[in-house]
Length: 196
Image 1: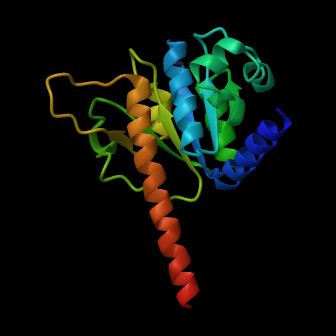
Image 2: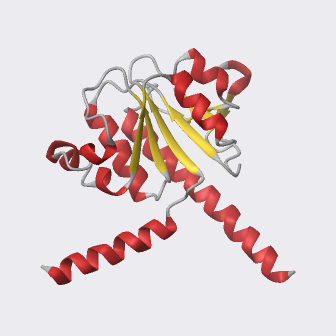
Image 3: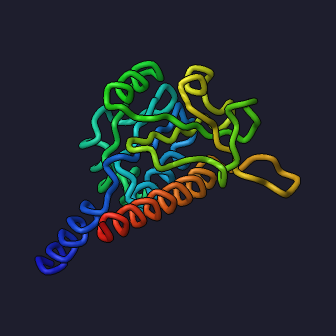
């Protein structure tokens, strides 16, 4: 048992080194706990830095330390909640202020066009130093306040009859794409620095 803990601790330390401290996933007022825990699982698996939760709908423990020990949440997130920090906010305004103080750029997601702010997933720029990616409520999407704070709003191209995706599924697609683009950018930057 001690050997197993040591091995897990080593894996956790290695994952912590790879975790992006400059990428945050923000989930605004989700209504389904399974979707939220799915996003937390994906965020942890992709080494996203943190998950910020604006919560007016779900009954959750107040502190992350309590969340990470909750058997139901551990099960629903495949233990992801144990390994990635989740910070709760009582309002969108509070979260935006916190992100602004930390110099984060905000980008949103939507299944609908938001006029000039809309960009296809493949067209967006994701290499900003500090980046917060926002996901909205399953029914109404992002609030107007969140959309107004975003530099642009991503849409996943869809080719079938159904014009929307499950929140957790869309978050997986978007976050994987963004993490990949940020890693490619970092690797190119490192190669250029080595050449100099």
